[in-house]
Image 1 (cartoon, rainbow, N blue to C red):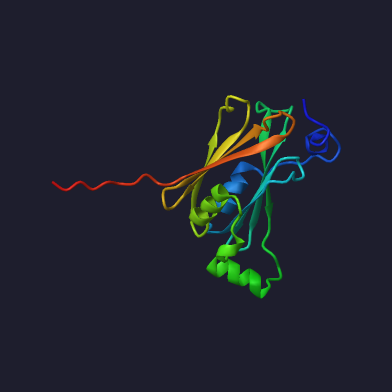
Image 2: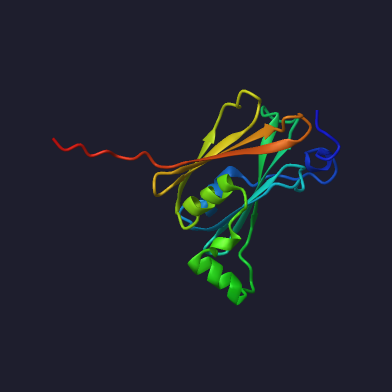
Length: 180
């Protein structure tokens, strides 16, 4: 059952928040280079943390999680694509071209490590997991050109009251060259 903080974002509750269609999402993201990736742990519009990805072109993607009663998933990933900005400040251009300065990385070491590895990479493809996760959530993965994979899943917080994003970045497998 959805919680009061999620109700207005679900279909059938007045202003329904609808996620981007997966085919449109794939068309907009595949082949795009990631300029920045940010994670906001505070509750976003759906009550879950928000992950933001900005491409070099200026297109931005916000990823959230929300409870859903109208699909086979109990918890869904919500994607919101935002078009490129019409006005770019010199700071925006610098960050898009050269990345962020070291002092601007997230204080959480796990997030900062993911930011360093993902920023500057090209999205090769999106993989949608058809079956729900063991807890009933939706899952998706972004394959990057370097062979790495950013996995995203919708889950529930430990207290079970809010939707949550579960993310994991895997480095590409290393090849070992053995010389006789």
